[in-house]
Amino acid sequence: MKFKMTYSFLNADLDLIEQELEKTVSSNEPLLSEAGLHLLQAGGKRIRPVFVLLSAMFGEYDIDKVKKVAIALEIIHMASLVHDDVIDDAELRRGRPTIKAKWDNRIAMYTGDYLFARSLEIMTSLENITAHQILSKTIVEVSLGEIEQIKDKYDYEQNLRTYLRRIKRKTALLIAASCQLGGIAGGVPESIHKKLFLFGYYVGMSFQITDDILDFTSTEEELGKPVGEDLLQGNITLPVLFAMENPELKKKISQVTSETSLPEMNDIIAAIAGSDAIDRSIQISDRYLQKGFSVLNELPRNKARSTLSSIAKYIGKRKF
Image 1 (cartoon, rainbow, N blue to C red):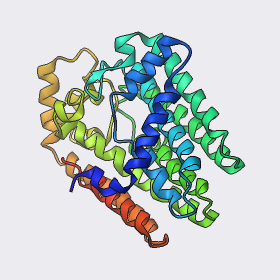
Image 2 (tube, one colour):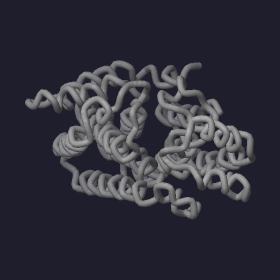
Image 3 (tube, rainbow, N blue to C red):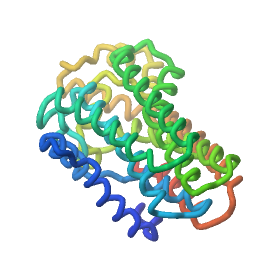
């Protein structure tokens, strides 16, 4: 079964959210609108809106209220991608030129800032102080994650804790917030939305680790960007950390710079993919996923819970 089939009953609401996203990224400034729509039309899984909608179903589901939260979370994600592409000097995103490549770094940064501001504006429709505190804290953490990514570039001496903290801030907390804020929008009790947060956090950690594995085991066509690009840009991920436990591999990997040639990179990518680093990374991803399932099993049984379980299983079984 295809991934999107697991939540096909949400299609009408997701179509509505897609239409609202298009309106939301629009601006009176034509260049901002064009840049925002360029990113939006590149597509994406819209996993964060899906998590928001499903989490709201543990309470009183009102699409007019919930859609605002879903849009806000997806726009924060989009803003972080725009900023990431500037940090990484990335030319492609989902197989299309990035905003910084199509325009320039300044336009990309202002577009990202505009999207962050729009997300806060949209969330004002939800009259819940806790929700606004969670969203503000999440944006702060995402921003810290972006700074850490810059600071940690080409640092081949960083440790596992540094990596886990970085992906927590850059990926897991936004997915966790999507689950928690969806629950709050549905009016669930605190005991439920805190569990939804934990579920989202564990699944988010697994999701990012899986992405980092696929950077070495997938193809450019599937990734929408060159294989091994994270390493070429200086982002030290879990498979790289494990591979560098081999002294010979560490010597090769630690010589990677933005100027490393394609043949050299292909040799290093093949060495990492052929090492035990991939299997060990999968084991860590699975560990987080199992923690997510444990929390999910504490939530009330309903269609939303079974769908969240199916989504988590998909995340754990993406092609390596």
